[in-house]
Length: 102
Image 1 (cartoon, rainbow, N blue to C red):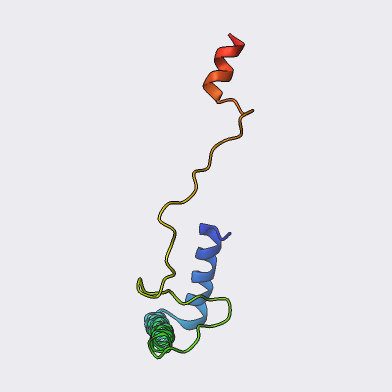
Image 2 (cartoon, rainbow, N blue to C red):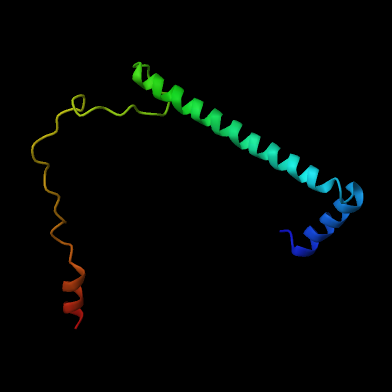
């Protein structure tokens, strides 16, 4: 990790190399470049999301490994009551085990 001393050293070297008049201009251009990069990355992400939504709306198959969500009308019908799951007869609940130890 970088400490405060290392950052200060880099700033002093930048000041010596570029001068006090050019540093604000350089910092401003770096900031603008970073903002433009972030905006472009967001645009690409939005475009990919839009194309995925459009693919789903047109009925194209989803990408491999992905499952398309079914609407409630498309879902298979389920049985009215699921079988009840019970513990085995030889299992003992924790409270009962504590009572037996006492």
